[in-house]
Amino acid sequence: MAQPIYSRIVLKVSGESLSAPSGFGIDPQRAKDVSTRIAAIHAQGVEIGIVIGAGNLWRGIDGLAHGMDRARADQIGMLATVMNALTLADALEREGVPTRVQTAIEMHAIAEPYIRLRAIRHMEKGRVIIFGAGTGNPYFTTDTAAALRAAEIGANLLIKATKVDGVYSEDPRKNPEAERFTHMTYLQALNMQVGVMDSTAITLCKENNLPIIVLNLWQPGILEGAVNGESVGTVIT
Image (cartoon, rainbow, N blue to C red):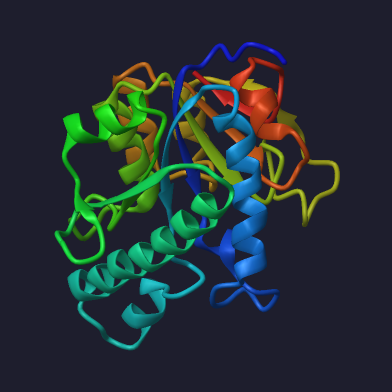
């Protein structure tokens, strides 16, 4: 088994990764599929933090379209990420991976509050940490939450796991001739306004010299390849 070159990572996955074929709700089988991929890199000794979105349960943009207050719409989304975090935690535990959920909004009955040093200690003991409720503040995406938590806990890699195998010059679904980048700089990503990650998250990674890998979560062995330093997806440094 190859030795990972990244010892502590944050993995950002979308809420849709847990969804039923319709793209909505939670499918326990999909949660199992995601957990087996995470368990594979955990078995290599990688310390793992996870931030998960909530697009399978709630999209704030839909609320805004009907006149909802932005802060309240974002708060609903933050709560939805906790539902996904608990789902993924359960799936990981059933894979034999010790897991803790920490939330930016305190809810003591179901999860620990986010405490930076406690999160680090859990990871040092081999537990996967799932960070729920985003940053705890409206107007910030879960991409930004992932970049923030990665910087706080001293991660040496942020993986953005998507449905595509990297960053393209154009939408590859619309233009089959679109170029896929194997590497780009933070400034290039910001100037291109790449759709896979928001500019606040990229800027935060740039300021903390935190590399990003954008990859397709569903490609077999892709997470192992990423942590082992193989050329996968698109690397942003």
